[in-house]
Structure formats: structure tokens, C-alpha cells
Length: 267
Image (tube, rainbow, N blue to C red; front, top):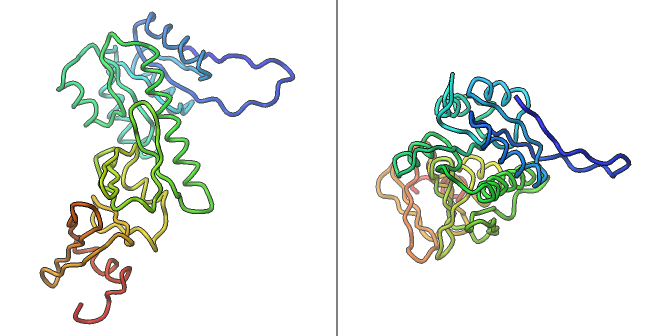
């Protein structure tokens, strides 16, 4: 295990809390190059050479992001990722996988297993740094909104290597996409870096948004029509250019009707 951090000159003003990265790889050259790169960008850096050591450090130091190699002794990266995602205390820890295994199948396995990103070796350290920094910064932005006294009024979305923000009033509905989500406006769809559940909590405005289905959160102000297809089957038509129809799950019908003041008998 190696822990390093750039020192702050005595008498300096107290610096904000450093972002911390854990680099996990059994190749010393890769660990060294990434450590130097992240240190120069202002990160505190921990490193580990196998999965067992990595898990111990994750629990001990709680990094902001983990750079995780796949092929390692004792415990490989897939096992570490599985352990992290199954731990409710670590479920939202960002993880970027590194591997010599390229190709679509390896990427799909990494992302479907819960990795936030997947980078094949050889790679450019500055590109990895940019991706890691974006993930950490967006997570921090969401947490700051979640902790605010008022609901989130802008939602962070990915726009290439940059982070953009969409005002909640422009969102027509939000669709679950595994560890991510898709934000739909009148004529656009954007990738959000957070789950539907995380966004539902962050934009806690029950007078405006309602989860009609486990995979859909809709803006009630954007509802155009409610279609009753059967006593226990309702569909919502929202105000986008496609007049998208979204079905309400049976267990959410009562709450949905109350939210739109449709509780009168016969409706």
C-alpha cells in the first residue's frame, strides 16, 4: 500500500478537502504514472496491488473514486467491483475499470457489472484523469444539491467531456438507464450521471415530479392527457414533440391520481 499527498506550505490558508483516488494495479509502472498524474491535478492518492488490499483500503480511507485493474493476484477487479456494488455503504462509489481486454464484450461486462467507465490498455493518463475528474465533480455537485435546503433546480448531464445543467422546469420526464438516467426535454434526450432514485431524491419537489413507474419520473406540469384504458390501467401523455405515452404502474395509480386531483369516484 502506498499513500501520497502533496504538502501544503506552512501558514497557507486552509485548503478545501482534497479529492481522493485509489489506484489499483499490480503493474508498478502504471501505478506510478497514474499517481503522478493525479497528484499534479490536486488529488490525494492511495494505491494497492491486488483486490484484497484494495477492498481493505476502500473501507478504511473511503476514496472519491477507484481506478481498478481487472487482472490482479488474489482477487481480480471483477470480484472487487461485485463486492463494492453489493455493499450498501459503497454502492455509489465511482469505479473506472482498466483492462487489457478490449472489445465490446469486455466493455459491456464492465458497465453492466456496475463500473462507471471502462478504459482499455494501453491508455492515455490525461484522458483517464479527465474522465475521473468529471465523474467526481458531478457526484460532488449532486451531493451539494441534495444537501441544500431547497430542491435541486438544475440537473447535471454529460456533454462530451464537459458537464452541463438542465433546469428542472425544462425536463418532461426522466427515464432509468441502469446506473444512469436519460433526461428528456421537449425535443432532446441527455445522459444523466445518476440513477433515477438519486435524482428523485435530489429534485425532491413532489408538487412537480412524480414517479409513475419504477423506470419513469414525470414532470406533472408537462402532462397533456391521462388515458384510462381499463379500471387499473392508466397512461400519461406528456408534452414533448412525440407526445410520448407512459404507463402508470398499478401500485402507483392511487398516488398519481391524488397528485393530479383525479381522486373523484369514476375517474
